[in-house]
Length: 330
Length: 86
Image (cartoon, chains in turn yellow, cyan):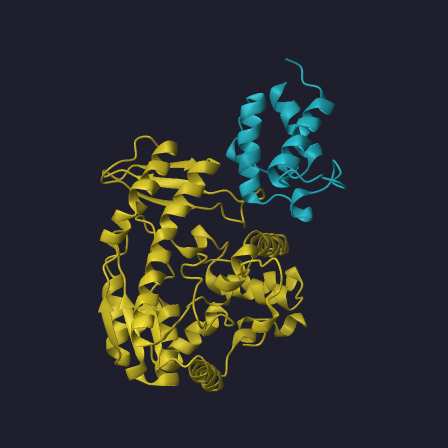
């Protein structure tokens, strides 16, 4: 591809055609599975909102059921934003409060125990998040640090030793898994499919929890770059407050952008790096389009490969010792 | 205590075989092979190396030492251990 034509325009969608394609496939698949609708877990973010809007186009609002599942660490605006989507698109929804379930499985206690192993001062009233070094500035291996903030605003940052890191991730993964458990409860009750809401960046880079938000019967936007999801959001009439909300994990008690938790760049730059890498575009050409150096884009390309390798197992089905050939094609 | 390079490498190889290859023979892994390129170790594995270096040789690793130059091959790791233990 010549440098003259490489810009954010490479991600421009024919939105009407894309909506027709996705809604057609969703309708056909629900019919094939003999299901009567879909359940969508709404986070107040762009991906679940677009998934819900596409579901309404595909099946009609009466066949879409929304779930709002805030918990103790959710941002204060999450519930209002997610409810604005079910109201705007006119489908039924309920609030499932996650905090009591998460408390009973020890999600918060197990996470806090692991944080205290790195930061002994951490206790009631403190907030926390985990962060990665920025790939653009950092040349070495990726490693997570925990950032804890005391009630009086003092912040402490410490690199996480392996056991603490794994325990924090394992404990917070309860959130995505409990949400999915509730989604399947309602899907079974209503004879619906569950939806997964990853965009292409998240799906490709393994930014999901196996058997948590990674589990779903249908993933309507997993092939779309995040910039394309925003285009569809505008086309489908997703309310502007949702479209303007910065991408967030909404998983840790301290505010955390997706680009400090997992991706090395803001989504619009990350999209172009992933697109460039997928289409064999030279690092210098991508660098010129997004205002970085070729060396920095080279680091992002390498980080994409590292994340693909390290999260490969998230995509794998359970390994069988032999094929059960009778089920092939069912 | 003076460390001997060949002994450091031997301990590292035993650790790699036991921990990352779950007892399988490291076979063709050469001392200069990149862990990332060969796919043997990812960033979680690097943290396991950090703990192993601490337990075995009391080597502490600072954040800015978690680099390819120090951690991406048996040669690099052995060089890092010898430098830190000196």
